Length: 81
View 1: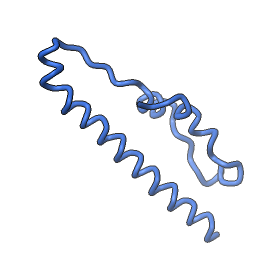
View 2: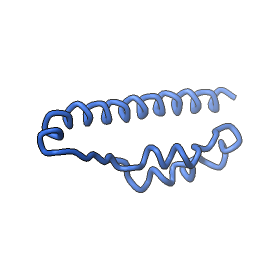
View 3: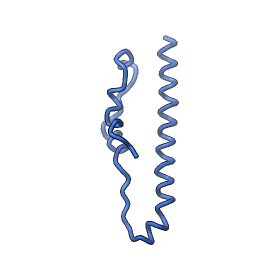
């Protein structure tokens, strides 16, 4: 589940790299930190929730992997300059 610190992601950009690193748009932060919400009957939730939750988690895992990869590439680029 996204946490409160996600809303402070732009504060984590170090001063020395602020000119090279773009900030995360507020609408993206809001989209990524909004808790999952589902509605339906107990039967519908029992039948569909595992697949929905799996997709939700997978999308966040992919996003984290992409962020980690980009962060590493940026750090390497800054070191080489």
